[in-house]
Image 1 (tube, rainbow, N blue to C red):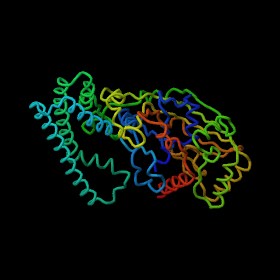
Image 2 (image 1 turned 90 degrees about the vertical axis):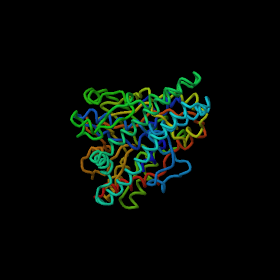
Image 3 (image 1 turned 45 degrees about the vertical axis):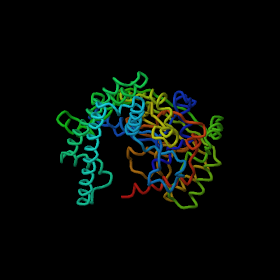
Image 4 (image 1 turned 120 degrees about the vertical axis):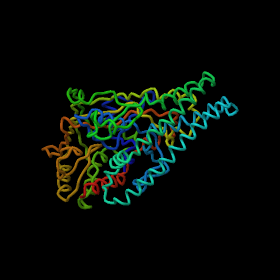
Length: 459
């Protein structure tokens, strides 16, 4: 279900327009809200594991075919889903560029090229064959151990590969591929015209392990004695310290109202009914739910959102990532860009907050209807932040819900960090490509998402 809210949801985007003072200038990049607000499960005793989490937060890009779990709820022909890892997409891009170099210098007649290329292909084939064999053994392991919870499978596989030596052997074979590529690219660089040298540099940096970092994939591995359990990743992180972010406040707050002129512009620009979208309702009786939906559309309300710390943080990427290639030789690769391109959207910064508090003021009619809805077993999510009808146990995944005389509040602890979204650059998009990116969500989308949440909460 992660893709429903990857389409720009007008209210949430409006919030970022205020807080980032952004008018969505294409030169600076557009704000891309995350799927609601992602909880950053940092561990103060494991700073390297924190970097691993942050790396994964910035390593997604582009749009492609919707995943199986949301195909019933979205238009598969137009929906923008964010399912591609940047590193993987960028490697595909570099592989394409290598073919451009080969065509530019026609090295096939040179004996040195044939020998070096054969070495690369042999190393790649060996790695692919090994991955195929390893995958087969993993499937056998799963058949013999059918009761592993699905959420534990990624971590269990990593441990399984380490225990059996598969990951070490895979890394050795990857190093052989890197070494072969470095040697081939060094030769190519000596042959190509100067205007193509950047492509060779990008490939060299991408394959050179000196431009990678070793990181633990779990907090219990974050110590020098367990470094043999760490994995290599191309360096890319938000430029901020978790310790400093937790220690120093920089309070940001803003008041909003559905009567503000700004929201009228948002409704028109993002095709979103503002009054009907801040509350999405699940459970309860059908009569109570319909009542809540109707009153949400006609009632005005105001709210204040505040953060103990709110910051837009630039993403650093080492020299393996050279986006100058996107505007030069990559500009002609139309299948790489736009809504269906694997490099359609590149995160350039992330929006991070902690200590979030939302105070909502609603009409007396709205409050009475909300209480009846909760009494019937209903729950509600507010904007991009999880909440409920006062019946969730206190859990950092959800904000604490409290009724007030004028409405209700939603509040995180002062130390709860959330990743709210990213600023992304879109290369080679046309206005017609952005139609679905700027569309709102339907109530059916919202209901489907909340049904998904309800299922996840059931034991």
